[in-house]
Every structure is written in C-alpha cells, then in structure tokens.
Length: 254
Ligand code: PGA
Image 1 (tube, rainbow, N blue to C red):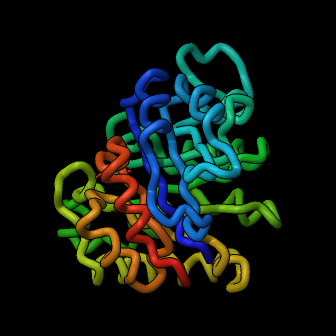
Image 2 (image 1 turned 60 degrees about the vertical axis):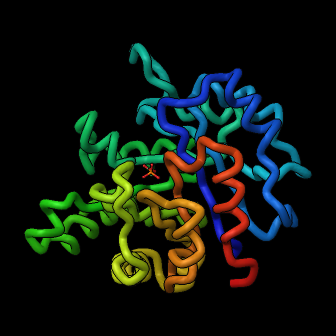
C-alpha cells in the first residue's frame, strides 16, 4: 500500500494561514507515491478544499472530529455530512485529546465511527495508552479495548474503509517518541487483532499510522518499522517545510 502521511493541525491554522500553508507546501518528488492527508480545523476545510487538486501534493482532507448524530441541537458541533460537504473525505475519531481532554468514551467513539461510515467518510480511528497504563502493564488491554469498540461498526459494514492510528498519549506533543521497536510491537498487536476482527485480507488493506512527536528526523526510521504504514503528525505538520520533509521521508515502495 502507498504510505499515508497525515497532518493533524488541531486548533491551529484559520483560513488565512491555511491558504498560506498550501501556497508554500511543496514536497519534492510529488509523484503520487505518498498519500498526503491534512486535517485542518473545520472552519478551514472549505479553503483547503479549494486548493487540493489532482496535481497538488495534498491528496485528501479530513475533519478532526464529528458528532455521532446526523444533525440537531448540538451547539458548536460539526456533523459528518457538513464536513463531507466542505471537502472532507476522512474523519479523525477518538484522538487522545478528544478522549482525555473532552472525556470521549469508547462507546462514543464507536458511534462516531458508525456515523462516519454512514456518511461515506473514512474513519481514522486513534488508539493509544497513557504512560500510567503502559507502566501498569495495561498496554494490550487498553489498545485492544479501544480498537474493538471502534472497529465494531466497520465489521458490520462490509467494504467500508478504515485507517487506524497508534498514538501513545505520552508521546503526543511531548517530544518523546516511541522507539521503532515500541511502534512495531503495538502495530503488530493491532494488526493481529484487526485480522481476527475483519479477516486477514480486509485487515491487510487497513493502514496503521504511528503518531506522537513525529519529526523530519525520526519519520523515516519509524516508517521503516514493520506495519508502520504511515504517520499522523501534529506539531510538525504546521510548518510547510518540516511537513514536506516528513512526506519526503516516506518510503516510495512498499
Ligand atoms: P504531535 O501530535 O505530532 O504534536 O505529537 C500528534 C497527534 O496528536 O496527532
């Protein structure tokens, strides 16, 4: 599969900065060998969509969060169909900041995955353990519980696409990165369970991304690990130059 390099802009980059980013983002070797996906804030999706073309380096856009209901009295929320209308093809679901800052549960994550699928958006299901959970030896229990909850609606939707992102909470925005061997262990665990849940053929087509302090200096090494099919980048995706370097670091042949 083509490596997938995704940028999660979090609560950064309004429409003006988004326009400037797309004007400056020009990774070398823009030959389509790498799939490049950006998650701008919802208010910047339309502007971003106007600049994403078949020739540009960014191939797809996604929304950072959706509500599980189709529409209604949910002040401040973004629906999956609105995001799709604004240009999103993917939806981040269960990012650790949603889980740990906003208290999102596995059950809510599952509802959001179901809504994304019903709307034709591809969910990018984020899973990851906290430092405390890792130290307690609960890595496997936590990751598999998050994975199983989020994948259940995918099991029920034959043919639906999915992306999984392993993002250890202790590595997000901290400068701490999982070692390639930590990443390989977690990705192997997730790939194995995905094969049980979806069947091995379908599971093999689900990219598993690594996220957490990915930088130009560590991206190539991480993406060389087994079953690390790409990266989900926060801070380093805000700068067109560093994000370009990460795209350039992706392996060209898998
Ligand atoms: P970071 O964020 O690269 O800034 O650690 C990753 C993420 O939260 O997706």
